[in-house]
Length: 134
Ligand code: HEM
Image (cartoon, rainbow, N blue to C red):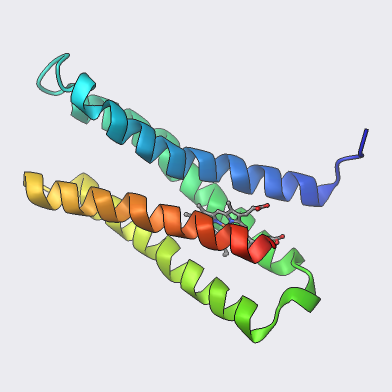
């Protein structure tokens, strides 16, 4: 068997956290219509519980993301690589900010808009992460 190392742990934690932050949002969005039927405040309760998982995952993404940058191969750090990282950092920040405003939105339309922006920017961060790792 291939021996795991620090790089394995770093990428493992980054990817596990990405699955929770990104995958969790899409799973929740897919379940909302069913959850709504349980009780009037069921969606709010489920969303709050999810926030207790997703925000720590976002924190792990930031910490392991910084670790990724420090540990990344200097040969990969071309102008294009750094440019991709800058765009990724912008969409990561957008995803976190949109999630924050989503939880505070009072109207259906703003709730839906912030929610969509959270998921799309999270998906973009995931795509850019795969690009950076190539
Ligand atoms: C929403 C937040 C984030 C998501 C969903 C995400 C997702 C990912 C994914 C899926 C990969 C590719 C793993 C692979 O293909 O092996 C990756 C790699 C990477 N991520 Fe993130 N990431 C996030 C936040 C961050 C942050 C905040 C930073 C920097 C501070 C960062 C820096 C990197 C770097 C440098 C790589 C390449 C690592 C390497 O080649 O060793 N990520 N990310």
